[in-house]
Length: 324
Image 1: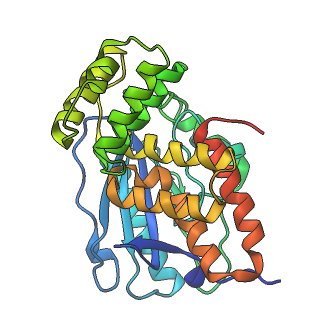
Image 2: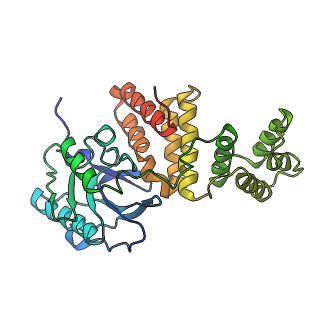
Image 3: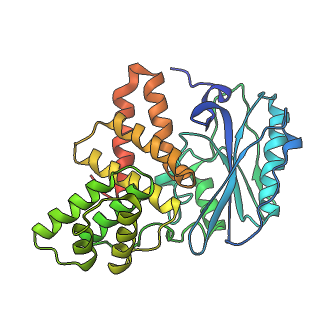
């Protein structure tokens, strides 16, 4: 079977709708100013969505670029070059092009071929090297695994640094994981306050004497703001990291991934729920976009749904931190 042309295969999501587009990424140290997107280099001057991912010692910035009109190859090459050069000139050590459904992995697995093979469609470094050609009328030709290794080496100290802005890297206790999940679900309004109080009462019935849980269980009126204040106090008591939208989105998605790995939810239903979480927590979307892409492919390609379900299950194992 022939591979699809780039103009048919490369997409992004805008307001929940899949449209032609590319994603530009740049890896750099945190704290630098975001550059202006070079809209004049693109036909019809698209309006991209800006994003930032970060840990304590690294940052990935970029744009999700809707392609209003696919230009011919040489003009697209010029637009890609201008975009990646803008990122490297803004302090990015490596900049590259991807798209929806193309693998992206946070440090320490950024550019690791075992995680990101086939993911870099064009690239540039702050040393002036780069490959910029993407032909809309030919199948996608991603950079080789050897090239990924060289980009990983060029980003040493950033690409291989552990992700810090999520839940703690050390293993959490069962209680910490439960509370982190409840806190995330409440932040995104995905669980009712009464269900949180019921959880606390069940925990005390089992003999849990953690002060924050006892206080939750004793609430007579399960109003949202009261429950949320008690959950925050409980999270502080047991040593959880502060909550951000990104943390809430990723932790909520991990919860769905665990449900899938346990067999309590179907793969496509899990992918759709994670898609919904990404809408509620846009800053977590880059980390979750693989599920959005797979859910869309599942809908559009009925003949290969079994394959997409296996991919969803594999990505869920990875997100949940489990191995087969």
